[in-house]
Length: 108
Image 1 (cartoon, rainbow, N blue to C red):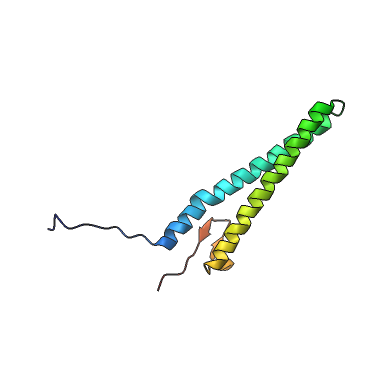
Image 2 (cartoon, one colour):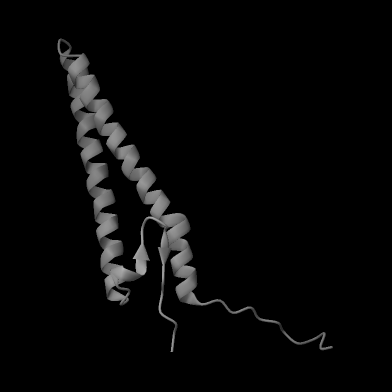
């Protein structure tokens, strides 16, 4: 029994990246993407319901613009993640978005 030796738990960096991507980043991207779409649709609804009030139409246009900006940012994040995965050499055949899994190759 060795009471004074250091016990170290090793975790694979690939498995950590896969967990962060699956558990945190993908749901966050989807949530923010849905939020941007809802904000855009809210602006569209306000625009059509307030046709006679120019001030409210201007506010609705602003909501639609910021919704489009949010959608563009989320698409950009998704694109950057795709580029990052391709740079790391993880083929799309190893990614299953329905299950939220990424099969990473074993390090050699």
